[in-house]
Amino acid sequence: MSERHVTACIDGSAYSQAVCDAAAWASLRLDIGLTFVHVIDKTGRAAESDVSGQIGLGSREHLLAELAQLDEQRARLEREQGRIMLDAACERAAADGVANAASRQRHGALAETLVEMESETRLLVLGKRGETADTAHEHLGSNLERVIRSLHCPMLITPPAFKTPERIVVAFDGSRTSKAMIERIAASPLFAGVVCHLVFVGDASDDCRNKLDEAKAALEAVCGEVTIAVLEEGEVEATLRAYEQANDIDMLVMGAYGHSRIRHLLVGSTTTEMIRHANLPVLILR
Image (cartoon, rainbow, N blue to C red; front, side, top):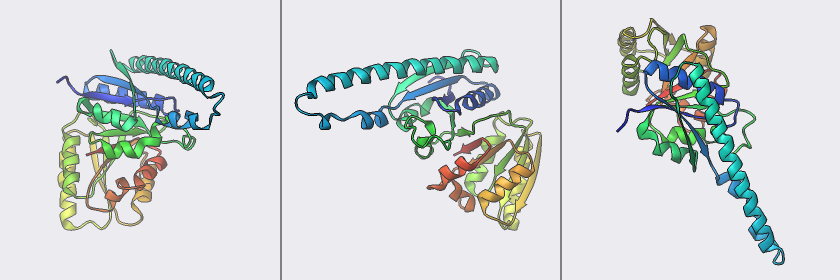
């Protein structure tokens, strides 16, 4: 099997440029290939255009033929638009320093398509849902929670703009999953030399503080500087957001599962809410 690469999903939304820049950054940092993917999802369109049951008997055959022709033209335009976007993404990645970025256009539901590609994906990059995307069936964000639930590879979810991270927050809850997350970060060149804030929200026991010290020691092997912060008051999401703003943080790194209040940020309906309200890229590690 060929080496796994960064897979970046682009569409016609305002997030595509940030997705391109984030994917290029990750590709260069990890020293692996980059593939841009544009998925044409016909499910929403089919529901809107299927009016065959409403057509009168006399005009049925003629109008159905016209509708079929319109659907064929629209599908061709979608393919052409997708290829233009993919070419532009490869050009932007090349400007960022990525040589020979690949591109693929697929048909089908987004989550199912990405599941099929998961075995060749080391990191998935996609844009979060925007406030104006509620009626856009093809927008990546409309399927964001389903994608997060369906895949197990690391996911980097971007806001409308991306900058190379210099300072990151790693949300730590002392769980076994958090320990595995720390080990993955420490073994990867993704955050080499980056300033890391290791943050725990809640009342930290002596055992948890020992785990924080162990995590700090592991992260110091790759990060330029590691700071431990224990935030004892406030709701987790708001507390993390305030800390990020106060410390000029560029990216939030979280595990998808755990056994503390942080876990609830990434389970159920709060998943999409947390990412929608985040102003930073969010890296989710399994």
